[in-house]
Length: 173
Image (cartoon, rainbow, N blue to C red; front, side, top):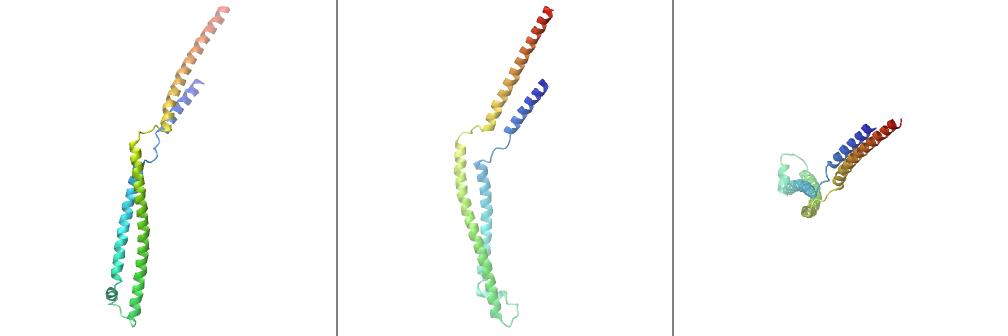
């Protein structure tokens, strides 16, 4: 019986200390770093799209369309040039639409970063609170010690009482 109780106390002690060592939630500073990394990616994508849009604008100039079709023989060169112009225009419009989405995403990230910076500053300015897991662990360890010492004391009293009763029975015989 004592062995089972002692094993239960040991298991609960290790479970409480393991529970307290779990990873804390992400801090504002960690979130801020992730947002900044995302912003760099979005800015790179935005620059890539701007470069592609500029290339397409250059390709849409009539002399460049004519130059790109110089090696192609056709009985209807006007239709061929018009087809190439429409093709480049569609591609440019798609790139510009993507660019607008990326710009919106960049603006949202910049807003989120400014909010995260403010939150990170607030978190760094206030003292670190004791979370509920640390509180449970600290009070739990003292509770287990009290239980262990109290149980040991109770066992010693019971043993002493048993010895006294046993001696009394022997004297009465």
